[in-house]
Amino acid sequence: MIHKKYLTNKYFAYSLVTGIVFLFVSLVVEYFASDYATDKQSNAVTDIILSNIPIFNVADIFVYGFFAVIIFIIILCLIKPQRMLFILKSTSVFILIRSVFITMTHVGIYPNIVATNLNIFKSITSGGDLFFSGHVGFPFLMALIFWPEKKLRYSFVSISVILGILALLGHYHYTIDVMAAYFITFGIYHICLKWFKKDHQILLNDIN
Image (cartoon, rainbow, N blue to C red):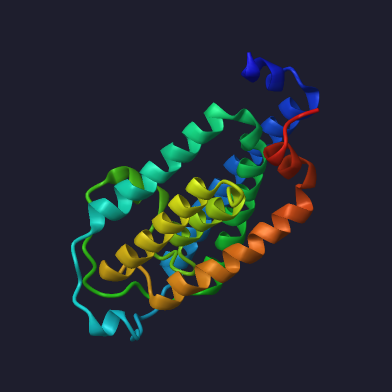
């Protein structure tokens, strides 16, 4: 019944379609940006953390954990459809801005990382899309979006920190990729608050 209420609302239906298209376009842009960054990458550099710790085999946890986060967010949106609009659009902006950043930075992947056997992961990233970390930034974006809901806020902040630690343990990201993700994501969130005011209000309150 509640789903019908939203889908029959003209603004919600139009905004939902717009958000889905926006997300698709952003993923396509990210795919080509990742390929470009990988093709242009130079040598690896030293790092204050990576250069001083051994490499740990956390590949599967790192990959499966991130996909679990995505599934969790989808479930949250299905439970309360009013969350969809702002999440779709803010995620799209996050992906597009990250795509711009990774085309600007061509530092090589840190040597001797543990590769993952998951083909689906290899199909969406070439490995050269380092700055900034999407694994860290995306859960933190969700923490900001769900900030009024304490359990979800703390859950997403914890997930972001854990994935950041795993990224460093597996040497998948440089320290700057992980640390900068929090600051850039915070900026992205506030951009989205200005661009998608009505969608954010729907997420917080409900459709009138």
